[in-house]
Image (cartoon, rainbow, N blue to C red; front, side, top):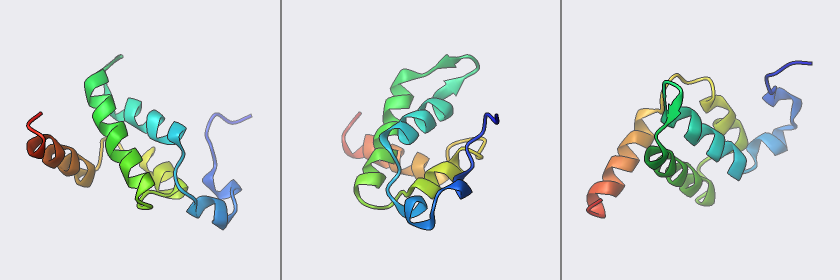
Length: 90
């Protein structure tokens, strides 16, 4: 048994479907980890950004799966979070 998920085991239709809540949550935790600790505030911001993209049809299951191979959160998401925080005086 492998411990890695193979996105190619899904049909093209499934890969194109919206990313799941659990995918977004797992990605948010992954990118919010600082050593062995999770920055929960940052996790919430990342999750909100990713799930917002899902709801707008901008983040598919395949795209979310591909994000797991990244070492850090892509710049486009960091910029979205920064812009949101600036606009809402957070």
